[in-house]
Length: 610
Image (cartoon, rainbow, N blue to C red; front, side):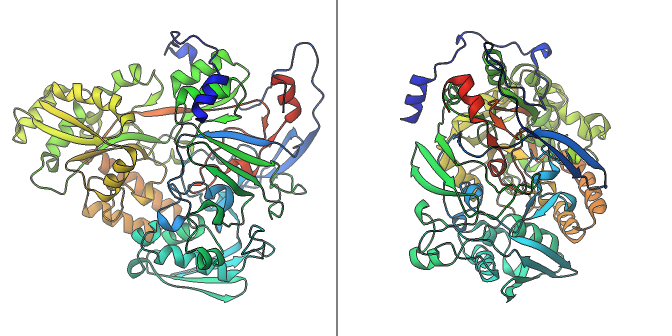
């Protein structure tokens, strides 16, 4: 319904037959300043400015002048699909993403260290922030006591949302203990499945009203600091005791800046400002957050409908998790609406096929077969055509992102055996198949969703040239996810976005990970995981282990990687205090509404209404 309404009211301003050229001349340069276009007939009122003096981690003082934020307005955005769950205990944060508006954890990224402040972080990528970029949220401070203890000092004066049965009471250490243990002990929880007590932790207790002590298994202190600090939301026990869980959106409670007040499946999700939110603006400490009166999320699966809504000012922001803007759509939007603000950046992940290597009867157990499948893909042709020149040839296991360049090994620095995997060589691919016992090729099957079909059809054509007959088993999204996580497919699965920004977790290679689609059980990888966990707080050592391991993972060809695409985030000029940030911390996909504001006067000048 919402898609139909938006299509009716948001007709695209560009002819459908006009296609942007993929030439480099049309590649827009990233913008770092907001330059709203003023109506020609009058000059806009002069904005009130504020001078910020910020200190970087190395002690350098950064001075910048910004517009003084204003309160009010509802930020309108879209999501491509409904939330899968509303209670983190029934999956994980990536499925219960409304919690990022309403709930908080112990630690998160420091907004003041990003583009809005000192510029030490990009806040574009799914990663746990290193120590110098962290900020205490529900924990005011913490202590890491080697070898096995985390002590959280709980922030005072933080209140849950003011509605029955919690009624806005103050959050305490008992709530933290309840929440952390619930996620670790509930069988349906992601934390329970991946971090079992026998292997990862001993106890979590409140020693007083404002202190929580976590006892951790040897070698697991670092990984549990991440999971308990930034990947576990805090909730009160009252709604769980009364309703059993928080799967019904109206039964959700948190400490965050917004409260979920309305959900219409397939249509919209409405959040309103929490008037009793505890945080102050880290850039302008006298200002109470949030600036927005609320957030409105429209559920719009269709990309063209979302673009039409942005063109006509129906929404304020487009891009990010699950609805990344690719080069063709970005070029079209910026051609018809040059006033739009945007950021172009490496997306931080690659589409990849995960071959099952746990079944000896399958051809993928042989390294020669996996190498042949990689060499049969012409990635440079894919970049020039399918990606319009806007993709990286090598984007995994470490991607070319600012935070990881010291760990990234470019293709020309890889050993020859790894480098040739990215070189198109169908003749050698046939030779390798013959050496592996498949001179005439073989048949292969892969499960996917409709959105993967175009890319996989190209791969199918490449592999047909070396005798590999690929069949696509297209599944509905829910069925696909269930089979992917449960590893119930026969031969292979495509992962639409294997992120390169959480390398230490080895999501797609470690034997215990639910995202290990190939069911890899490699002694070297498993040992490196343990070594990085042990060296967690030795940043230099941990990074060197991962740098070396990434070359090994590439060389083993466990996955067939496609090029890693560039993404665009595009927003209206009246969305202020914003520079394209998206992930401020570990998985907080929509964290920026905490801090941004709307220039409603400018919006009215440009489109006639607030």
